[in-house]
Amino acid sequence: MPELIPSPTRIPVPGGKVIEEHVGGVTTPDAGLQASVSVAHMKAPGGWSEPFQTPEFDEITLVLAGTVLVDHDGGTLEVPAGQSVITRGGERIRYSCGPDGAEYVAVCLPAFSPDSVHREDEA
Image 1 (cartoon, one colour):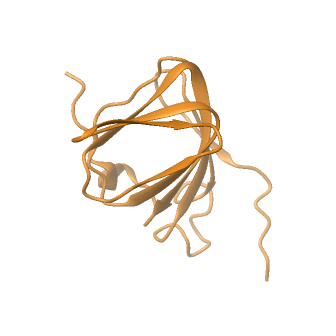
Image 2 (cartoon, one colour):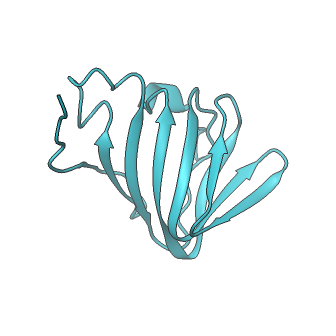
């Protein structure tokens, strides 16, 4: 039977970024999906960045507005609105955005969890 998700759950993070999880461990913990997939709508302000990470999951990022930057061992990939990028589990990456910020949807397989993202210390 179809299950309506009436609203996402806003997940607080530092740096002005807004995360609204539609499916995942926070919003749908009893749907049987929390371990298999997460879907979140993100809005990041201009100049936002997060620490490098080496996640255990693949991540598909669909950019709706602005530009998402993905730093990786080979350089930096710019992903403008209307394009997507796939990062693979085990890759060392860092997400940031251009001066105008970015709005995007992230789909993680298996689902995102704080224990599986492996963010590096910011120091």
